[in-house]
Length: 171
Image 1 (spheres, rainbow, N blue to C red):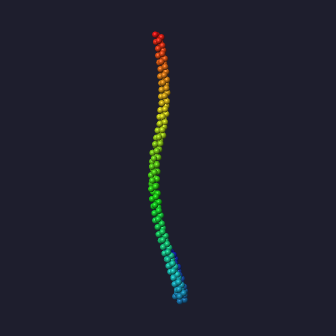
Image 2 (cartoon, rainbow, N blue to C red):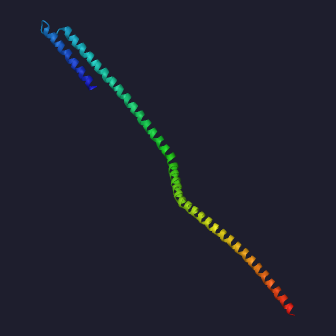
Image 3 (tube, rainbow, N blue to C red):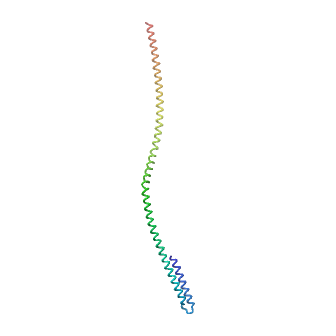
């Protein structure tokens, strides 16, 4: 705006200088009435334009202020909405974060327990196989023992019968 005012001021000076030149060219050496009227007309036109510019400048300034007021109000409204959104999502976010951390902790605890279970299962299977093997061996030994005992009894019975026959023959 200041640049526009400076340009208009320079135009006025140019007009005034032109009026002075034409006045100096007049025969009487004084400004003619026509030149004076032209100067007055140019000056009043300049003042009218200056007032119009000032009025428009004030109108624009008022509109800018009104816009700024609306923008500030909208900014406050948006900030309020943002706070409400943050309040709504914040508790859930904290809770979700806590649950995720607990899941991570449980996963870390589960991993070695899983390895321990697998190890114990292998040991159990090995122990069970060894137990079953020994049990089978025991059954075989018991069977063998029963066979031996049975054989031994037969042998003794046979021997007893032989002895008994021998005694009968002696008698």
